[in-house]
Length: 146
Image (cartoon, rainbow, N blue to C red; front, top):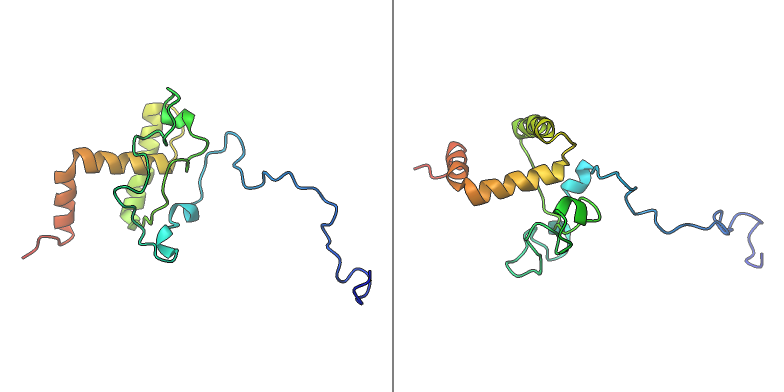
């Protein structure tokens, strides 16, 4: 101890302890997500606006850019693989509807449905197949009011 301090006061208490380096990885089979992670956004980053551009390099094919021949659920390494983080705030009644839908879908599919997958699937279906319904909802909220 040649640092002029009392023995023990400046020592690294973890010195000599090896770490496996995989502490940040999700445990195998655990694909649950944390709500705080779901609302994290790149809008908080300097210069970030929370929205990706049309050519931001993201593969929107639904398989995270992996062509394994397997469905996306099985070809990705975790639920966040191949997804951009965007801000997603929900009203209380929307959260309730989401919980009901998740339970209903789990019954139909006979397996657990991740909320990230549910949200993206619902979002894609609404944007690609039900834009008129989305417009009607926006009108109810006051859009297109004269």
